Structure formats: structure tokens, C-alpha cells
Image 1 (cartoon, one colour):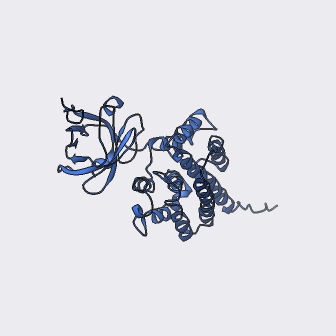
Image 2 (cartoon, one colour):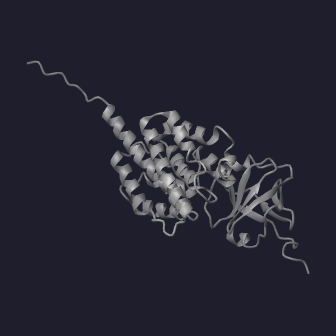
Image 3 (cartoon, rainbow, N blue to C red):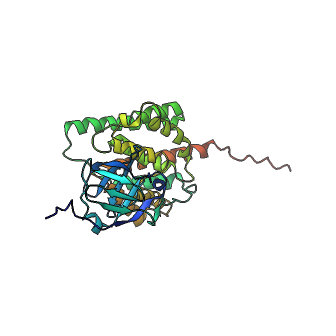
Length: 313
């Protein structure tokens, strides 16, 4: 009797695919491998070395990701180091399972709209909403406590560098966050992800720090030598302004008036990412909102008041 891995499985049709990924997927039927396996996603390494992801649609759209229906996902049995052939379909060589990408809806991050009109008070109110909905970590190990202290110090250094307008200092401080912490995506990387995605939104004065953040992430030694391979892929996309869809939904919710239920719901959805990643991403977003408020306040104070000549009687 054939085992589950030896049986032929009907083709699985993707329900969505990152539009930017489509052009980067090989089509010549060369083999890549399964890089890592998790409950609802499988990371794949293409024959060209690109790390991408196949996931259940229980997870939201994200950069470099192909999603399949949860019912189909439950039938897949892809394992570490299994060969996967890249062509018109993704073919899992051990059992012949194929994932059809052609025709799947193309995902692009939802635009946040122009956030130029947000005043410092609105930005600080949104930062306070995030603060109220962050969970206080409990039961941390000694390593996690040390890493959290370092994260706090280095995040403060980055904030000071941004307020000071020193691009070199921003790059230096951001680079010190890369790879800081444990896990699949270290905390320092997650903080940078939240900050970078927010900075890319239209109308943000934080746009000015994006080249320095990109230099911190992509300059110097190879990123995969400074953090995990999965986090390197996530950070590379983040400095290009691309993150998981729920992060973009949160940024979009900033444009609504007041602290709306939609904003709180968006915060809670980001918080649910991973074990601590969501909270760290929110920390980066909260930092960005506070910095944006400071920058806008400073710009307003720098504008000279209009001078009216005295009336001549």
C-alpha cells in the first residue's frame, strides 16, 4: 500500500501570490529545496538562492509569499530539505504535489493613503493606542531580559539619531539592532520592520531616514551573516516599504479620525504575529509615530510667523 508521500495528489491552486515574487520565480524546472517547515507555512529556497514562502491562507498575504486554501494546506506533506522543482508550477518531487501559481490573484500591499494631514497630536494618540494594547512580557529567561534591556537602549539611540538628523548616526544605530535577540525574527529586526514600513507611507517626514535604514540593513557584510535567513528576507522587504498585509492595514487605519475600533483591531492583529514578533513590530510602529510627531512639531516651529507691517495712519 502506498504511503501518503507516495500517493499522487491533485494540483493545488494558489489563492494569492505576491506580485513582486512572480517575476523572481524560476520557470526552467530547476530544483530548489524546502528550507524550513512550520505549522502553517513552508519556507522554500529557489535554485537561485531566493528565500520565499508557501503558506495556508489562514495567514495574511505577505512579501515573497504564495498562499493556498487551508483545506489544501492540510493535505500537503512537505518536509525539510525535500526538493521542489520551480517551473510553471511548484512541484514537490517526493510525491508529485503541484502548486499552480498562474492565474492566482496578485497581491500588492494596500496603500495607506496620504498621511500628510496627520498632526502631532493625532500621531501621539495613535502611539498611545499601541502602547495601551501591548502585552507586558512575563516569564522571560535571563537571556531574554538582557536582550530586552539592550533593545531598549539601542532603540533609544536610534530615536536620538533620527531626531538629530544625522544619517550616519541613524545607519550606525539601526545596524546595531540587526540580529538583536533570539527567534526566527529577532526583536531588533522586528522593530526595524515596523519603523521601515511606516516610514515608507505617503506623506511621512520619516521618508528622509529610509536611505539610512536601507544602508544599515543592506550595506556592509551580507545580511544573512548578521541575522537569520528568514529575518534577512523580511528586513530586505521592509526597507523597500513592504510588510505583511496586516501591518499595512494598521498604517492605513492611522488616517481615520480619533482612536477608532478599526485602529485597535489592526493593532491587535499585528500583535498576534508570532510569539513576540507582533509586539516588537508594534514597538517599531509606536517609535515611528512618536518620532514623526516630533519631526512635524519641529517643522512647524521652524516656520517663521507672518510679519504684518504696522498700519500707517
